[in-house]
Image (cartoon, rainbow over all chains, first blue to last red; front, side, top):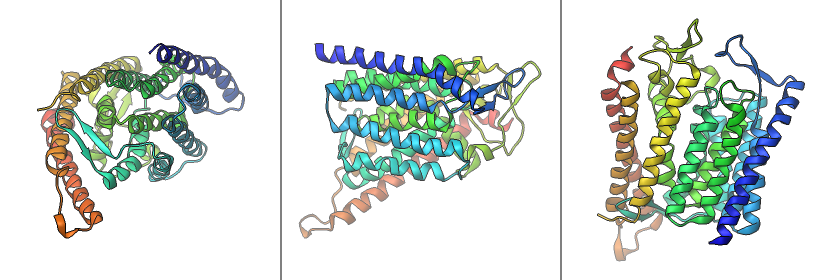
Length: 329
Length: 77
C-alpha cells in the first residue's frame, strides 16, 4: 500500500508540474509562430494560442511512463500508445480541416493497440446485476469507445476552460471509483489524467491563454476511454461523462448526422454585454450550452460553473455506481 | 429552473444505463442458441450483438422521448 501511495504522489506531481511548466513556453512559441485563433466571445476578440495538445500529451506520457516504471503492465502501455495515436489524429485535424468522418474513423484505429496488447477483459460489469461476458461484441465496443470518448470531450470544447475542467472532474471521479473498486494501478493512471487536465485548466480557464485544439481534446478523451477499457470500468466512466454524452446526444438528435464542428451554425449568440444567449435559429443544433442559456443570457464564466456543477453531480453518480458494483439484486 | 431540468435529464440517463445494463446481464448474457448441436459460436455472438443493438436503439428512443418531455419548452424556443 505504501508503494502505491508513493507512486500516486510522484505520478500526480509529474503530471501536474510537467504541464504547468511547459505550457507557458508553448504559449510563447505558438504566439511567436502566429499559431493563434480569435476568441470571438471575448471583449476585443483576443487572439489565443492553439493547439495546447503538445503540453497535454507530454504530461500524459511523462506521468504514465513513471507509473509504468513502478507497475510495468501492458495496461499502462496501452494507455500511452492510444493517447499518443489520438494526439497524432488531433494534430492532423489542427493543421488541416478534415471531414466530419475523419476523427471517428481515425480514432477507431487508435483503439487497435489495446486489442493487440490484449489489455482488456471481454465483458461488461454492471451495478446491481453483475457481469456479462461478450467476447465478440466487446471488440466492437473497444473500437467504438475511443472515438466516442474522444469526440465527446471534443464536442464540449466550446468555451474557455470547459474541456480541461470537465476532464479534470471526470478523471478524479473515475479515479475515486477505481480506488473504491481497489484497482489501484489504473486509479493512479486516471489520477494522472486528472492532474494533467487540472494543470492545463490553469491556462485554459476564462480568459484563456491557450486552447487545447483537437489534439488536446482528443488526447483528453482517448486517454479517458483507454483508462475505462483497461480498468474495466466502462459503465462507471460513461456515468462520469454523462453531461458531455448528453451534449453529444442533444447535438446528434437535433442535427441527425455527424458533421464537422466548423460547419455547424452557432447555437448561441453574443450580446452587447458579452453574455451568451440561445439563438432562435431553427437550423442551429441543440447543445447543453444552448439549454443552459435558454432562460437568460450568461457570461462564459457562469456557463462554465454550471457545467462543472453538472460534472460534479455525474461524478458523484459514478462513485455511487462503483459502490453498487458489489451489490446484487 | 432549466439547470434543474438538466440535472433531471442526467439522472434519467443514469437510471436508463442501470436498467439497460440489467437487461444485458439478465437477458442477453445467458442466451445460448443450439446447445449440443454445436450452433456456430460466431452466429451465436451475432444474435447477441443484434439484441444488444436493439437494446441500445430502445435506449436512444426512450432518451429522445425523455428529452422532448423534459425540455419541451426550451426546445421550442
